[in-house]
Length: 68
Image 1 (cartoon, rainbow, N blue to C red):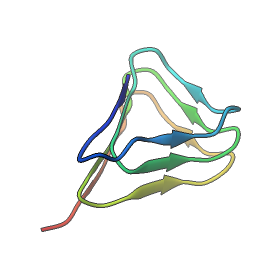
Image 2 (image 1 turned 90 degrees about the horizontal axis):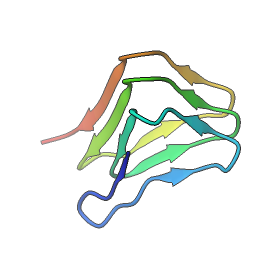
Image 3 (image 1 turned 180 degrees about the vertical axis):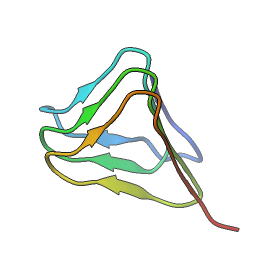
C-alpha cells in the first residue's frame, strides 16, 4: 500500500519490489533493486526516509521517521 501523507508521495524506483501487504507512507525514497518484504512498514511522519539501492527491508520490519 502506497500512502500520501502531508502532501508527500513516496518515490519508488521502478526496479524495487514492494510486497502487496507492505506499507510505504509519506516522504519516502526507495532506490534501485530494493525489496520491501511482506508486512513491512516504512512510514515517514514529518521527516524523510531514504532507503538506498540494493537494500532489503525484511518481513514485518517497521521503519518510522518522526521529529517533534
